Image 1 (cartoon, rainbow, N blue to C red):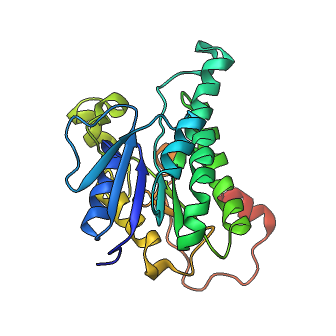
Image 2 (image 1 turned 45 degrees about the vertical axis):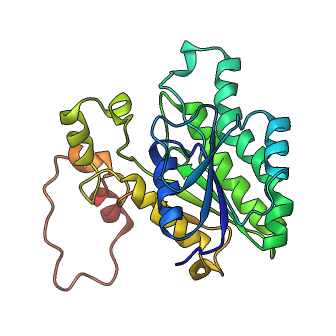
Length: 265
């Protein structure tokens, strides 16, 4: 299989997207360690659990140093509750930044020597929230934007020994989807806003992670791979009242600037 003999660490790998990534890595032949603050309610078959708070730098360095080998690090741990900016003080928002940006940096630095020796790779789990406004999760969106930039810089600094890429993930159906999208009707309604007509499954993200970790991606580093089902339909398309007209079979070679502006939404 693609990752036979490889050793991988997945932070936040006990549930949701992280568990989906861990399952995919196991299926691809990797030896997988998952870490989180608490053990999984349902262990992922074929994985080993390591208790770890990725915000604790000393604990992270001890855990990573103790590994005999490491080929792949998946920085997945993260998340944030819905919290408008004015409903919390700055210190609380900083905690979101610590988990979603500083912790991946801490873990990556602790893993660097292992990955340099094995010529391994890092996969950051980013979010579409990092590239569009994220009202209610602004600190999270800012952290994910920073994470993507961090990955691109790492990819240059640590080349050619270590490859670093980001999966920019859209909406995913997990055991906690109801906290974000509501009941079954809400999830169905949100799914219809995705061009591919459904939310991602954790296995979709896992398959993309396996690809970036495999030899098939040996020349890919500093990249951001979109895993979002086609993105989000622009809101203006549903708000506009103009009726689309057919494109002329033989449009004029030059269209006046004023006319072009009149036609824009």
